[in-house]
Length: 185
Ligand SMILES: [Zn+2]
Image (tube, rainbow, N blue to C red; front, side, top):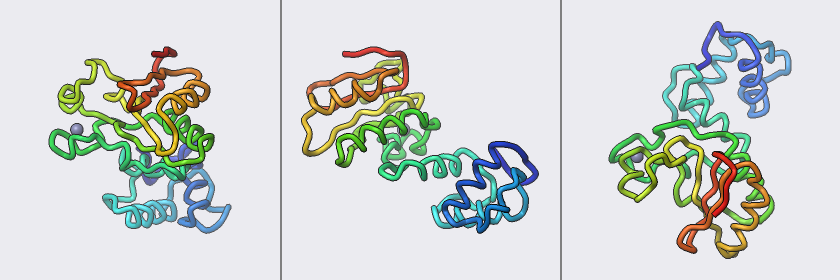
């Protein structure tokens, strides 16, 4: 969490992003100090994105700021699919490495990726037949498909792109990838 009074590299990163998005005006606003101007920028950002307006960069706001870097994905696509029954959709933060890999895959195939499963709360994971220690529980896994490319071919792109994590094809209907240990199935 970062808030007014904080200083350092995380504040600088935030200010850079706020300048790029037009919430802060000048390069001189990038001073690594979370002052009133930065707070106002965060507040405006929260307004625009329908977030709780408190001027604090907590879990929700930092998630939305992270997604600004990945134009083809939004946080909503990764929500737990229990549809609010057992959690608020975001039981954990999403691993940025996962989104970065997905964006690279998206760039390679040149067509939209559908996230059939991203985050899962424990209850939803059980009900959907996920393994007990599923990486979906930790925001480190996604099941994907894409129109216009077969699951097999998408799987090949995933394997050549997600070189450090897990890749698998499930039921011939979607490709699983994660940022856990390197393995393949
Ligand atoms: Zn849930």
